[in-house]
Image (cartoon, rainbow over the protein chains, first blue to last red):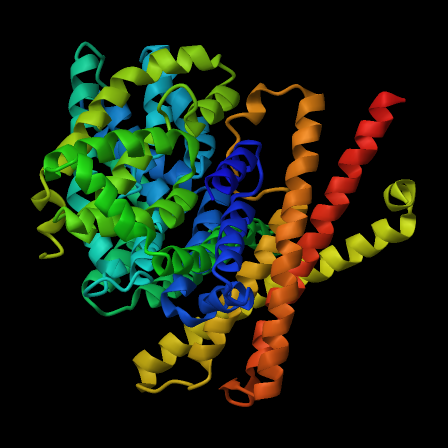
Length: 424
Length: 170
């Protein structure tokens, strides 16, 4: 048993696709308990029985279309025209623009590549220090994970729904829960940005430019309102909001702005669906592995074991933070969700932690995992994109890392921040 | 045998044809998904009605889309994986790691495809219907087919790794 587990971990470290590792775990487990292995296919088929999953391909497609168009440029121009006059304004612009963009496109490094290309030279020109710029852009690459309609928020709700623990948790609750913790991160970073650039020269606010920027972005501005307003008002189900977003983005970028030609669409669709396929495949096989884990009562046993050593909620939360931080540097957010949440959630509930709160803690931790040295993924993406040694990125990101770490700690030990809006 | 697989034009051409078919179907499904979901919302809001078969069809399309996307990810070698270790390997070690992991994926996918096929044939016997007149086995067919294709592609990748290893020694 332990030997098989070690073998699977070794294969995963060698770079085996994680879906195959998870599936192998499920197959071996069921084989050992003499269950017909067709159960894996049957569990996989449950992907076709969850209406909310429709949101994943549709939001991803919308995000890919946006990132292929000039939306990023308009977003930067707009925020700059509105906030550029403040001290540290451009840096705050970067934070807000990246957060919005990541919420729609997912933290797959797209933000660093698409927005970084615009913001990095602009920041340099405005006279910010090089290391500051690098740190800011790298950090911003995963900012916005907690804002709707980011895929990890949706996926967390879906994974918890499969566990059948108490009342089911809705995607819309996660969307609400992420707002204040996400804003907290933005505010803390903004304060640091303002303080560290207090000597920066200011540019003047121009009403004409602001109006021009608003006018240029007039078709994209309604997007957050359609998504958030539609879902929060209860007018749209999550999957409907995704469909409206996909249609709206398609019409706006292809037929109104005309930045994407019709013949480019199949390629964009295909590329977006490769990501969707990779995520759904992992989700599908994890339905089977989760089923096995619950059958084998692994979460209960895990809870009993941990309970024997950790007796307070506080101590558990501290360990959780450390564990997730390490996990986040190695595992991508989607695999981490489907593998760890089925194990962690029953334990966390045992310690009296709200499932919604756990979700926010989990994602906030994973978010800083993206740029935690030495192996956070975004460090390498930024190093590649801006042609800088990874060592320089370690130095450049550490102040941002400390700030977001303190945000994660506040989020962890102040549950009301996450739970007040969804009213739990 | 290896040489045959690596150098046969026939295998390559077949691979390309199948890939184009898969991609075409993928794009078609996503486009109809957007269209159908849009239609349903329009009907609900403007006419306060809806078409009964659209919702179950959309759910099945999610599965098909996911499977086809996963097959494309296998072709592109874009599956989600941990790439912490591979950054520190030299090309030769990387090739060995790829050979081991692709053989592993091929076996896993093959097993799921096999048991998926048994699942489909059971449902064929039961004559279960998902919605309208669409039988369940048809909607489930993508599972053995998809995993089967991924097994084949992983096996081809494995063979090309072996081939590279042999080239290296020569």
